[in-house]
Length: 303
Image (cartoon, rainbow, N blue to C red; front, side):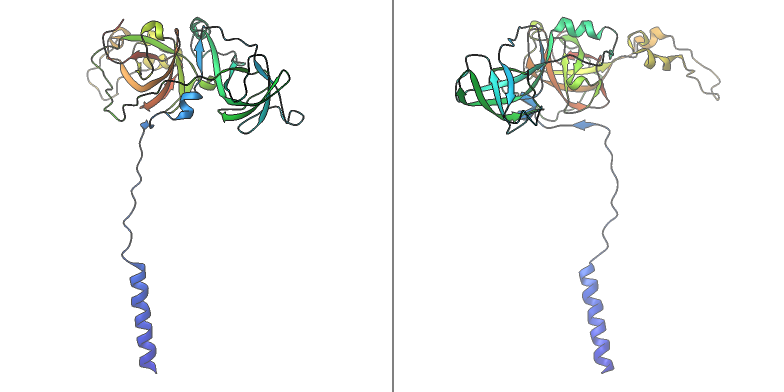
C-alpha cells in the first residue's frame, strides 16, 4: 500500500512539472519616445476641420431634434430637423460649425492675426441623411458623428474628399540638407489645443495659393535661435553652459546658436487644402508639436 501511494505521488509530481513547463523568460520593458500612426482613416479625412476664407452660407442649419425636449446635443443615430431650403429626400449633408475660441489666450505672439489672415476656422461635426420632407422641415438621421452637434450648426451638401496616399514608414531625416519648397506656420490645432502629438490635426497658413496639395507632407522644425523662440524657452540660453571641472571655457554667443542646423521634430500629411490654408495630421513625432511651430513642405526648392 505504501509503495502504491508513493508511486501515485511521484506520478502526480511529474505530471505537475510537465504542466508547468520551463520557466518563462524574463520580460524586458521597452520604451519608445517616438510615435507613428498608420494611414489616415475615414474619420481622419472627414472630421479634421479646416480654415477658409471662402464664404459658407448659414441659411441651412439644424433647428431641432426628435429629443429636443430632453437633449441639446446630438450624435450618431439621432434624428434631427433641418431648416432652410433645397433639401431632397435621400441626400446627404455635412454638418459644420464656425468656431471661435472662448479662451482668448494666444499660443504664440500674433496668433490671432495669423488665424484671421488664413480665414475662418470650421469644425466638421459629421454627416446627416435626409429621410423625409415634412412641410418646410427636413427630417434627417445622423449617419456620421465626429463630435456632438447642436441647434444652429450649419448644414451644407456633402462632398466626397479626394483620397490621401500614405507613403508608409520611411526614414526620418532630423537634419534635412535641402530646404522645403514652402515655409509656413502651424497657426491653430483642432479643439484649440496648443500642444499635439501623432494622429492629431493642425492647421497651417499655406494652401493652394502656395501649391500645396492633398497628400503632400510638411515637416515641423525648431531652430536654436533665441530670438525666434518662445520667451520661456529662450531663458535656457541665459543659464551657464560650462562645468566646474573645465579648465578652458567657451562663451557661445546667441548669434552662433542661430547658425546651428535646424532640427526637424515631426512630419504631417495634408488631408485638406483651401486657397489659404492646409489641414494636416501628424504621422510621426520625435517631440511635441506646438502651435506656432514653423513648418516646411518637403521636396523641391524653397519659395
